[in-house]
Image 1: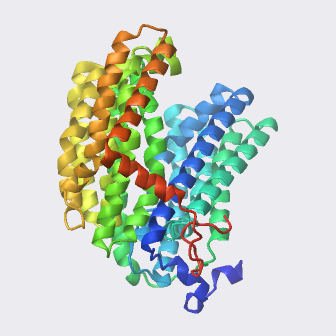
Image 2 (image 1 turned 30 degrees about the horizontal axis):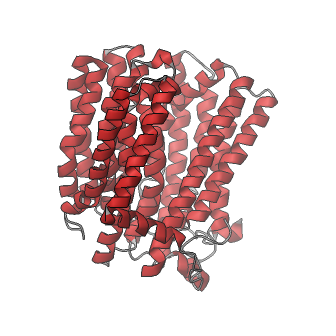
Image 3 (image 1 turned 180 degrees about the vertical axis):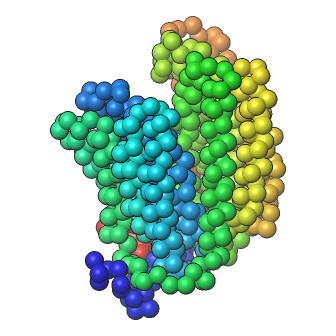
Length: 521
């Protein structure tokens, strides 16, 4: 371990140079992005399936009280997690010219932050235990805090994987950590460890991910040195952290306001409707974002390629997501009944209104790609404050009309903020505010056709809920395919994406880190 920690970066072997050099050839970028999205999608699906399976098993081995204690201990951890990376992972991904001295300085900042956050979480155990009246929360918080120490040691290695667009390694790391930590949790539960089996799952996932990051990236930190060279990255990271915090608070504010002003039943309907809508959208947006931010950051000095890559990504995301949101909105009642059950029928109108916000968020979320990839951290933080203030203000007004009023306010504020968001995000970048709207134009037209047919079919079909759902979705799929068949430009956008996916030429392996992450995970 002594050898690993004190290796001098001035003597870094040339094999490490590929981790900082992220230049991507024109014919490589499309394949790298497509493969990255594929790997990330697979990782997300495996993780989701594993989470469901593990929950099913642990639910039979543990008591509701065990899960309740864990939820209490995680109260503060969810918020503190927003500061785990301090925005420094994004700083490494975005920085055009990066040195090992800067990476080393950021490593020690993240390591120190991990220790500090661990102490904060551990210390919070006492007041949390008093608040909930559960002394058992104290040791749980102390144990969960230990996870922050390990995660702090993994931030820069994970950032280097993202910078080099090693998406295969990242996906493999995530799947391995998920599988091994789930096995550890089940074994612990079988041994009678109770709530501690959930702690084992949480902390072991972080430990395993840290170990795999260090194994995948050959760089090792040297002794701490001056932070002078890293100050611009620290400033950018601070701005990103502020933005992340603002978005987190605005995302949680609706639940807090509904729970405070209304009641648990209303909050339950709203939260289930929101979760049901966001589950598929998150599975679509997250992989694309994970791949596009480093891809766009690598094109900062090539305005035309940046614009083309961004517009193609927005177009592809919109073609895949917008028609799906439309169909979910039209079949909201059937979807809720089939997935959640009859007792949740009240969530259907809430789901339908929230779908409007989901439709807008498919593209508005890409403002984060622009801010981050172009290094405009202060603008990102400033806009996040404005966005959060308007969104939370909308919730405060909307709750006067009940839970549906909150959903309506969310949809309205997202619509009102869409144009200003792109005006601010595209300023001083290769993009114009019109680029995102031109990219989504054809998907919006296709989605409108899907909407008209879905509404017509839904109004004229009288079957059980699952029958209505299948018939309406089938009709929508046929319309989507027909639109692509008769509209050459829309078909061309999809064909371009498929053509990229079909390329299987071997990438140049002369660098220390290949773009598609095809070496060891």
